[in-house]
Image (cartoon, rainbow, N blue to C red; front, side):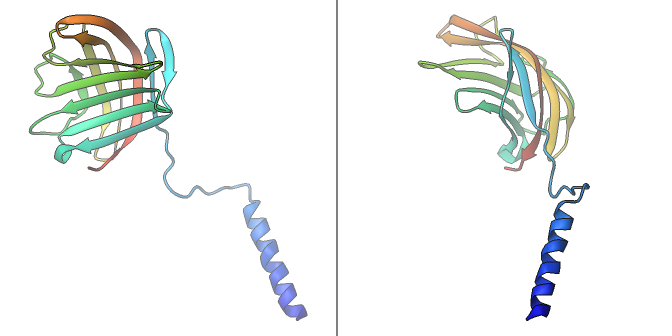
Length: 171
């Protein structure tokens, strides 16, 4: 009986000593995901950031969300190929289409967007992809997103100093 108590005590002490070690080993992936941007001059940092491949990997979608009250979505689309590192804008002739959206919920939801081929002359969006592979991406963005009704622009939102880093989930 004393031997069992002694072994149990030694086992507990060994666990306590190893758990109090100054060198903590990290298990799993360390994530440093972010999406930050100034929206009409106000700095925002989105709590939840996700990237994902859509439509067989030809679409890249990056989403930043703050508790469901505010979100930024950037989607880069192609019929034939994946996005690579480089500079993209709404009317750059690259063969990629960009859709950028900002949604904000107060007493009602306000949506502002920018995409190729709209009638609103104010919309603009620039995306710079610094690094991208099958599992992660990093870059920066800026633009003017519009809220329209028919051919009338009802309002704009200006995005400056936008930056992101996130993993990319498979389809």
